[in-house]
Length: 70
Picture (spheres, rainbow, N blue to C red):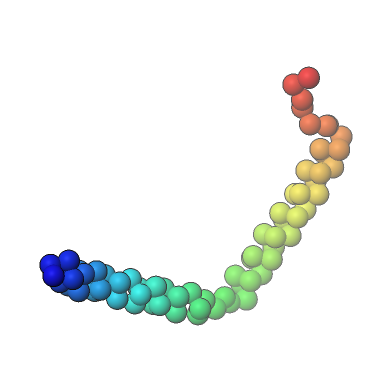
């Protein structure tokens, strides 16, 4: 009888709290903060810069093959 009382008093409230916390965090994630035009432009510029650097890196890699131990 004692284990049943412990389950009712301890485990069930913990499960309820965990469920409420999970639904609350899910609800927050479903509504992202809207971005303004300046932020969107900065993000797009960062992606463009990264892609340009990647192309530069590939060209340099073609000129200088990977260093190998052998």
